[in-house]
Image (cartoon, rainbow, N blue to C red; front, side, top):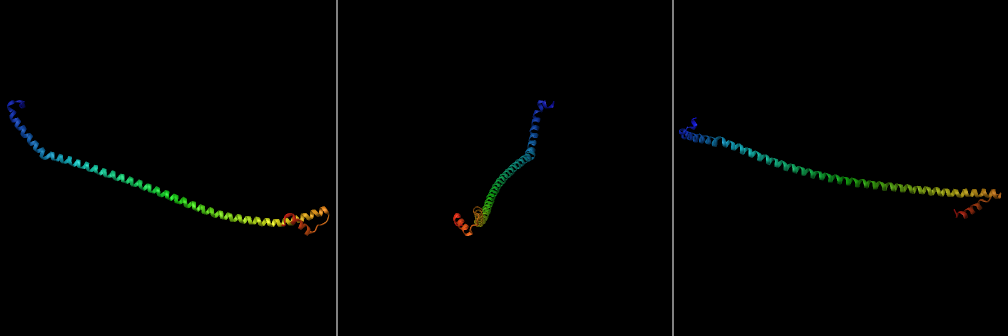
Length: 162
């Protein structure tokens, strides 16, 4: 094997140094800057993606906060509308109740007036009927027809002047 010949070590070491130097220069000037550029670009892209993701997360959190605020405001408005509607319906019911109470009070007064008129009419007829019954009873008991004035005076005295 020629690599193990001791006399050939010096030229092999020289050629090794020359080849290593050329390879080092080629890599240092050509391939390594491109690799470094690709790594830097990749690192920059990852950083940009992380920044973009952070902005999107912040936007999403803001959107959630806005949504919750809008939802709370809508609930408050719905509650206010419900209270306003309930109060309005209660006022309408109270007005309708007052109207019906007034109407019923008027009908009750009319009914009381009709009852009083019927009672007064009945009382006038009671006096006439009582006078007729008294006359016929006296006529059957005594056998003679009593005077209308006497029966009327006796009834007035008994009934209190009605």
